[in-house]
Image 1 (cartoon, rainbow, N blue to C red):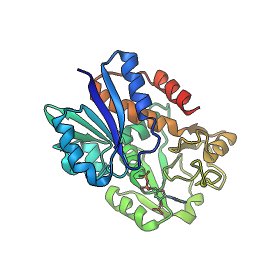
Image 2 (tube, protein in one colour):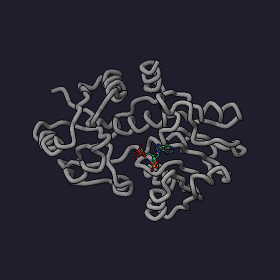
Image 3 (spheres, rainbow, N blue to C red):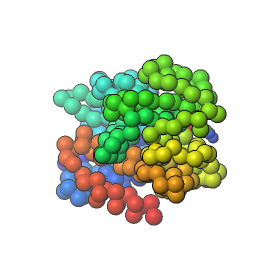
Image 4 (spheres, rainbow, N blue to C red):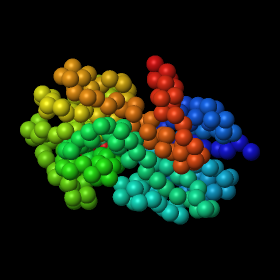
Length: 267
Ligand code: ATR
């Protein structure tokens, strides 16, 4: 029987997840399909009952369900508990589990580097920033600083994860080895001409933007021009998806092949 997977979110809009997973199923000869399920918040309870009854094999979970889905699960991984949000639902030993592969998305591209940065500045304090801090701590990045437009939100992260908080206005005084943008600044639309970093880049700094539309944000274009190593947001999307694929199927979808499919879809 064809296995069923999908993504729930509201409003769901355009998502690259079906492209990624369906191309993986096809490439690896897995009899499965992945669909988009736009789901209003009020429909979550019924949907999760359906998930169990109809034996849907796995789910990607996006805004606004990442926290609310937790009460419909039997178990959560350590990472999902640490972040306090779930982006992946999977079955294990007849139990429904929640995982947060945004952490993989954020750190797998960094973990591959010859020299993982020793200090990191996380810009933003939303869900992605929380996943970033959990991941950076797993990578044993020595100093992590969080900076957010609304300081009180950064302070919650500072408190939860024991990391330093610096005022948004003072961010340019810092000289981190990694600048990681988790804000929407630079995203296509009215924020596209903006950048979360308006000063010179510290020497040898790696710049990572999780915005992937456009692929080369203003932040990344400027960082590249100054000779910084950059990581594009598509890497975050790719690696969170590959980690989901691995959890659901136990198989490895080649990152290079998957990246090619995503870049083609984006162009
Ligand atoms: P996600 O789950 O993707 O992290 P989010 O929870 O909405 O999304 O968080 C978005 C982050 O981007 C927030 O930290 C937000 O700052 P505020 O806490 O002040 O709202 C930040 N952000 C959004 N728009 C911004 C802007 N124009 N300038 C600076 N930061 C911005």
